[in-house]
Length: 274
Image (tube, rainbow, N blue to C red):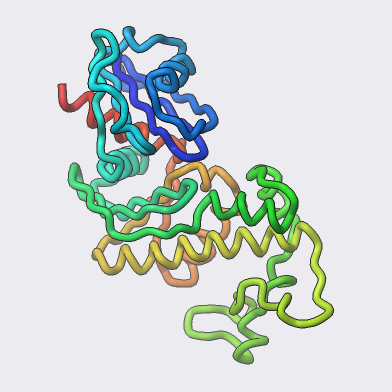
């Protein structure tokens, strides 16, 4: 058997596979901010095993380089996170090349072409931003709660729209698209519900990621954008990404099990290097 662990800031993701099977077992556990042998053992326990059950264990993300090269008789394979993102994103999306966008606590964007992956750009805006500003603006950092609030809200209550800023549509953007995130709060007497604030927050985070990704993909001459990471587990975020893609005639794909892409990429690399 092989396994791989992605030590993220918010989540630790684990993928395990028998060497003679394509079927994978997935598990996730909250990130602890510490990467050591005991944390690795706790992560592996989430898939029902101890480290010695595996021929090799791949590790990536966080401070994975601090881990030893071996635990008992089990080699620990340290996989560059950019490589893991690229390999995992392409495998999940069944594509040979794409801009793979890893939307986790922050956002990394990787040009992946077959087995070659290169970091292109990224943003400090990601799931951590959603949770942090959610705590400040809504009193909750629970991503599922923020998502549920956003699904019931109207982002154009806090945001200023194009029709207000320019009098109508602008290029590919319709008149009701937002022009200034949270701009209405600069005006006296503005109020909004928690649902509306959550919707505006999701729009801001999703738009930043989508616009940077579209521009990066075009700069790299890649037709497809694949977005992975646990941020896109949220329906409200997925909706924003697809809306922005529609504005600019871009293709954004969100594959199944997007939160496990980096761990899966580390597993692919670990098994291939035998």
